[in-house]
Every structure is written in C-alpha cells, then in structure tokens.
Length: 377
Image 1: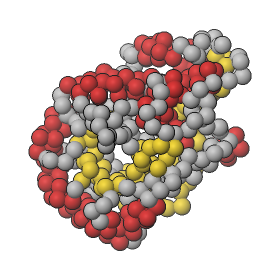
Image 2 (image 1 turned 60 degrees about the horizontal axis):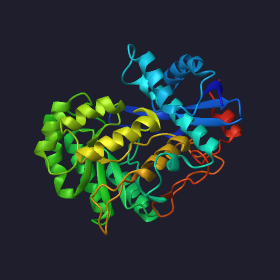
Image 3 (image 1 turned 90 degrees about the vertical axis):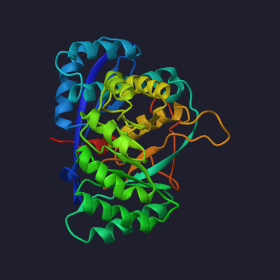
Image 4 (image 1 turned 180 degrees about the vertical axis):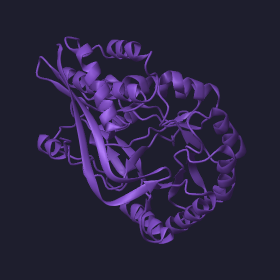
C-alpha cells in the first residue's frame, strides 16, 4: 500500500455569541483536518491542533514527502518528518502539523488491518470513559456570577461529574467566580480551573491559596508554558494538583517537565504534541514518573476520536486495586458548529460518559457535505 495524496481541509464557522478565555475573544471556530489517500482506496483522517491556516501550510509542504511511502510505517514516517523539520521547528506549528498527519496514518492502519486504533495501540482497558465538561467562559454581556452558575448547574444536570472553569481575568475576579461555581454545583461535582497561562507564579500562588478551600481538582496552566521554575514554585506552594502541557510538544519537551517535577497532571493535546505515535510514548513516560495523563482536547470529532482511542489504552492513574482511578476525557461544551456536524455519527455523551468508537481505524466517518459547507474558500 502506498500514499498517493495528502489533502488539507481548512474549516470555519461563526458563533452566535462571542466568548473569551484569559487571553482572547473568539467569535468563530476554525479547524484543520488532514486527509491521506492510498492506492488501495483507504483514506485516513487526522486533525491538527493550532492555527488552521498555518498548520495547513506546513502539511501542504510536507505532503510531497509522503507520496509513494507505505502509510503503515507510522514510526518511520514520524521520524522522517520530524528530522526534516528539526532545524525549523521542534515545537509549535511544525509538531502540530505532524500530529494531524500521524493521526491520519493510524486511521489508515486500523482500517487496513480491520481493527480499531486502540487495538493497535495495545488494547483497550475501557470501552467507556468519564468525561468532564469544559466551558464556563466569559461573555460580552450579562453578570458572570449568574451565567457561570447557571451554565455549571446545567452541566451537572446533564450528568457530568466534573466541570472546568476558565479563569485568568484577575485574581479577585477569579476567586469570586470559583466560589460562585462551587456553591452552584455543590460538593458532589468536581471543579477544575484553567488560567491558560495568564499569571506569573506570584499571582498564581496568591489565587491558588484563595481558592484551595473550594476543593479544586486541578489548577491548569497557572503560568507560561516555558516557565518551568514558575510551575515548580506554584506546585510547591499549593496543595491542589497542578496541570499543564497543552502547549508542550513531543516526548523531549515532556521529559524536561517530568524530570523537573513541575506537574502533577500532564495534558498533551493528541493533535498537537506529536499525534498518537508520540502521545503514547509520552503517556508511557508519564507513568514511569508517577504523573497522571489527561489529554487536552479542543477540536472536532476527529480530535475527540483520537483522544478516546488513546485514553482507552492508558493504565489507571493508581496501582492495581478494586477501585482504580482512571484517566478522563475533556469534553468541550462551548458552541462549535463544526465539531459534530462533520461526523456522520457524532460522538456524544450519555450522562457524562462517552463510548470509545469501536469501528475500524478511528471509528468515524466524515460527512463530505458538512466538510464542504464549512470549507474556507
């Protein structure tokens, strides 16, 4: 089997209401899908986390390197692309682009061998995965103390056992928002906070001490991703778990985080940190350091499917026991017209539980009409 074509699909959709996280406002969602065709009629799909037009440009440049190659040699192709890009980008857009290619190759491999990707990754330890709801962003209008509480209660009513609040809008405002959401959902629902690296270690520690009383599941990206010393300072000062890694790349980047003991929870994005090939290696390394692995997921159904297959094969966070603590799925609940529309069978939750796709490859089919509808001309 040989690769005969590599296509990029840049997608975009406007939102009915703009929302903000700590560093920017969004009034539209974009996505970039990779489609790889073979001479046996098998096509694989992947998704790149990151700026869609930039990752598309890289994939379009890399595509010719893959023509005529055997798509089943996933590790060899990963190493070839990484080596040829190394002088120009060991992190960021270059690796995000490689990630989408790698996911598409695994989709082809599963379809070729007639099995789900998780079987090729070592076999699923679980067929259903607990999901937490990501949302709770800021809006242009309304009282945050009201709409954040109402949104969080809505997620709990849907069956989600945990929710994640976006913070990074100022220490006092964040502390107030955290209190409001905790009071709204009560003690029985998990609550995590995500600053998207809005703070330095001084501010992050101050905020952390103010919100620790609210039983925070983890404090995500408290400081800039390159500030490993800052991560260590925050981790040493607070009792709550510290999470990060959505802006880190490859096993080499995570090696430095793990050796530095900067994190309690690693959050590589499968579509950004190196694809399924590399993220499985990162997960294995995390286990050796006793660091929990909970992927960052922010994209369409393709990205969700890739994360589900990886989470399915990960070991529990805790040693073997009668009540193991397993990895969970980030399930974005913000408005995203593209997310499920491009799948012929959307990946949805049932009372906060998401089933791992059991079809061939990633176990998803792309709706070509939806793809055309959202395509950037």
